[in-house]
Image (cartoon, rainbow, N blue to C red; front, side, top):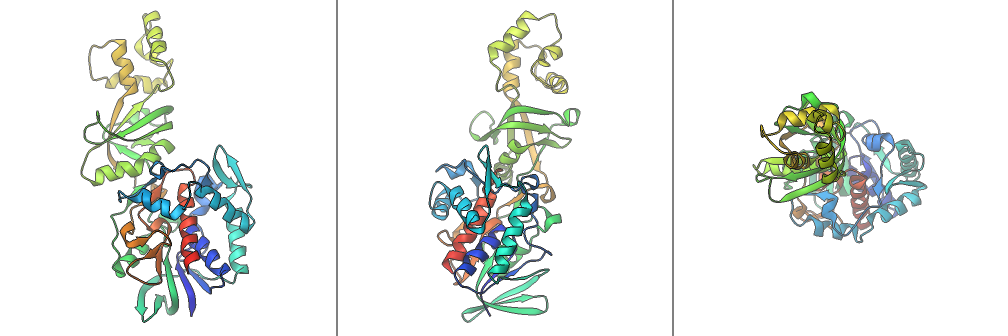
Length: 399
């Protein structure tokens, strides 16, 4: 008999287990993999980007959801405009020193292993039991207890936390099992989709595959001249299928939401965001004897310059038109890359099912859902681990 059974072994589960065990509770973690935190080892290219000091009160800048009121939900969870400080304080209490690189926060060693070795030692010291290779068959509510059927064993607990993670990175353990459990418990879930992933374009970009360039990307829906859904600046990577790079990953959740609604999604790329129009005009006016491709190569990769010129939608145009075209080069998004190539999962257990103060499920006493299983996903930069750690803490604090 356990006070708390946590299903899943990611960062939300770990923070929940540590928080509850520190309060004297008997805790067991059920993990389907052969070790905890497999996805954590892959975060930040192995350096483990835990959180980010770049936070403000506008959480819609960093997170996405199907719910229109998710910013209110996040404010209740985070309780302050500095959730990163709560994360670093929690890590410090475990004996982990963090390191700040341009607001991105990592373990001082710049290795995920230092985080995982630490939390494993802490869990062991707190007598948290961990059952690996655990496939959950069923969860039943019997009187005031939960009975969890796992393989050939039945576990009874007063409280259960769903921390199964999402469907992304299947080779690291991502699956649909958590959503199936949510369905068994009659919890409403939104449709899930990949996020923090590349975007497939209608246009053939194979001629410029491999090109990387500094740019600004603006996401639009059906009428690309009107509302901007989101904007990102950074390195654009062009691939055989379309667009990639951190800036595109940060737009992918909103792009997926547009496509899911049945609308068309477009991205306009500004290929020369840091070049004054007058500078481009002077280059073209003073060197008119040179070919346009050569002149564009002053500002752009040569393959990209050729691609832009081939796709200009007029046979005759002046320099001002070309400059405007460089600032507003349009791609139509037809799809996202799949879960295997996505860093997180968008969608999940509806926020209406949850109490944001402690992540408890409204319709069940003693049942919680945390982390990626819920309908909130963050942009790149440690925001998803921040959400995982704090939601896990909130559940652990309330048990």
